Length: 215
Ligand SMILES: Nc1nc2c(ncn2[C@@H]2O[C@H](COP(=O)(O)OP(=O)(O)OP(=O)(O)O)[C@@H](O)[C@H]2O)c(=O)[nH]1
Ligand SMILES: [Mg+2]
Ligand SMILES: [Zn+2]
Image (cartoon, rainbow, N blue to C red):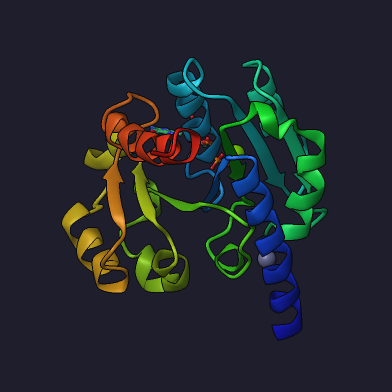
């Protein structure tokens, strides 16, 4: 396992160098199945597509469903099928980027396989690790899956439109997450209503500007 992780780190470092050279900001988007990753990507595309070149890599065990949703918006999208594998690896990203024209891309979003466990161990060469937790999953998930919460740069708490239907306690969640990862930014929002989305957009735009137009 250590050898596998070390080999992955090497390839991830090569990917990161390629992305730096091409001035591409790369988001590794992680979450459980159904937390709202694709919905989040679609809303992000709608908000940023006039200002930035965007491309998406979709990771799933099977099907092209998510890549087709992105392509329907006229955004380049590559589907990786892991054939049962429960996470993406750096070598898969290395192969997928051959199908993209990175000179036209400012923001590359990678939708990882729905899983809160091993995506935490396999870096891909990303600039930012974005984790989504959705309200119906419950506020105790950071206690059970601490590693992925520790390793993320920003936590999106999606589906806040469902708060009244659940016993999800936002303060309890924030306390646990910040005790695991004091530097993480927490952004509650709804991909359905758009509430809270502007805070995510300013976070990502600040990082995009630093890559696309460095001072
Ligand atoms: N109420 C509500 N539903 C949402 C929200 N965001 C996403 N959904 C719904 O949640 C379901 C799953 O959303 P997806 O965007 O497909 O989630 P995903 O994480 O990409 O799912 P997988 O790729 O299958 O792991 C869909 O029915 C969405 O419409 C939200 O903010 N509020
Ligand atoms: Mg999806
Ligand atoms: Zn896995």
